[in-house]
Amino acid sequence: MNYTRAVHETVAALRTIREQWGELLLAIETPPADVWPPRQLSHTMRAVDDEQQLDVVDRAPLVLREHPAPLNLAALDTGLAVERLVFSLADTLAATVQHAARPGVPRDPRRWEYADPDAVDIRRAHGSRAHGLHFACVWVEGRVLDEDTAPEQHLGGAPAAPPFAPLPLHLLHEARRTARIAEGRLLRTLGLDVRSIPVPDRACPWCVGALELHTGPEAAPRVTCSTGPECTAPVPLDEQRRRVWEWGDLLALVAALAAAEQHTAA
Image (tube, rainbow, N blue to C red; front, side, top):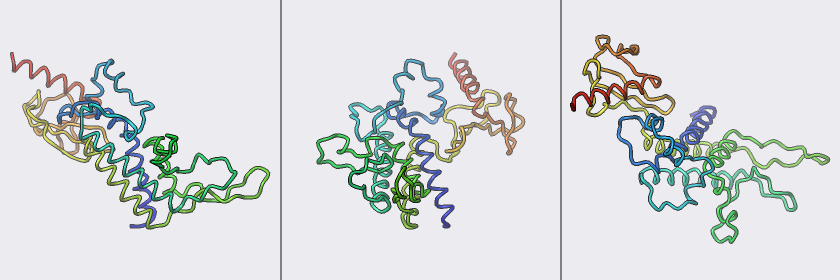
């Protein structure tokens, strides 16, 4: 694999982890979801009170939190595993490319600080882990992109050494491997990996055809009907000439399925 592709894939995986981290935190505090409705849609339909309870802004890292009664143990295990992978990767990269701090110079906020379990001060005990997964992903991305590796001109002084050295090729490949493992586990837990699966125990309300849910990490979920153009559902056809409910139409499909279920029960 060439250098440019390795950088691109690593950065893309790290950004996916950051973008979906809030969804994983929500999943930890939500009972495991069925295939239907898709997780993103169930969050859209959640009551306002529940949404406020599940606010994920300014949450502490999972490794620093207590978890007395998580509602989704699989999601919690995934979150801890992803944090462990990314934090350990940051430790590995820092050990090679981060230059030693200079005595008498104020602490550089760009530095990755190692955890020190024996420290009394909680900040030193957890190091940069205390800033959470987002910080760790951004920090690793900076090393992969070789940011802050050129000499720096300080006001009124001579050029100073940069805080980091360029990332060696073997560590770039290690970063790519680790980031993609973490990304894959997170997406699988959220049901956002690339898959096409039948919608269980539900048929198309317009033609009784089989419904299939399609998901992917870079696309909103969508549903198709197997009947084809003969289905009278008020949605367009996809490239395989199946009726398709894109993201904007899924709430209408949920409502139609609920109405059909009530009619059958009556």
